[in-house]
Image 1 (tube, chains in turn brown, cyan):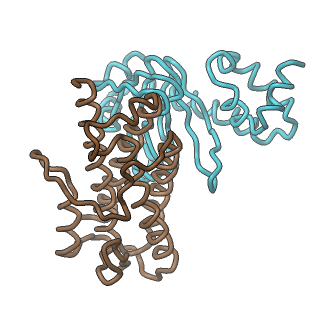
Image 2 (cartoon, helix red, strand yellow):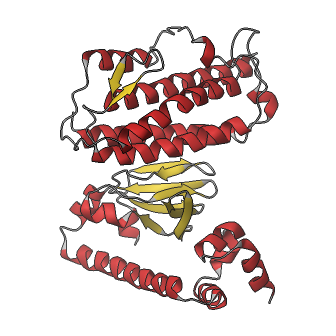
Length: 183
Length: 168
């Protein structure tokens, strides 16, 4: 895939993410903290979970772009592992539940609407990083994953993984809203 | 103008604060605002700077992207709920195959150049009071439709300064 095409599609996904979460701002706290049962997340917990990932990945991406002396490449290939990781995050038709790492689980944390602002700030940072990434190689710049410092993905796959993960949980938020209406 | 709007085959509805375009995207569409208001801004470090507004029955476009097909720095965001008709660059291209249409399009672009020049003089005017007066005279509509904090940003002054000028 052309690198610019990839960046364009990631920017577009991010735009849609921002728009979906902007709408949540108008919900009241009761709706934002409603949960189907004790062990599942409410909307704010979903967003906080994403914020925790953002806290990890955004600074990593930022510093790796800044300190890279690679050049932009026309084509983005992605690695076998990276493509697999990025794809595995995509929500499937039939719900494929996943385990959350303990340090990324905000269940029953005290959360308020600030979580939404933080999320939107992170999306703005993400837009900025997507723009900056044009100057470096999406194939060669490598970002450590939150799973292990030893497992690193190239920048292009990291962006895909990161954004697909957000999309995954925004779908979860849609399901929570549907369950709440029907409940 | 109607001829251009009629080219549109797609209508979008944006909620308050939703984005039509974000920084870095290539956007070769022209948008006609059926209802609502939008703002066009750039991010300067972390500071937003509003370049212009779009009102009901205006055309709005990332002209840089439209003309060059390259990524544009601009953000376009709905200030309130807005209904937008999308006219693609491709549709405009086909429209311009006819001589009379080209004349019409040139008139639209000329009008835009004039507006841009007015805006350029705005920005280069050093007195906040004069900047305010220029815009008030040119588009009183702006003060009816747009929240003060956005107008203040557009005029490059603090909200306090704007409210003082409005009273005097």
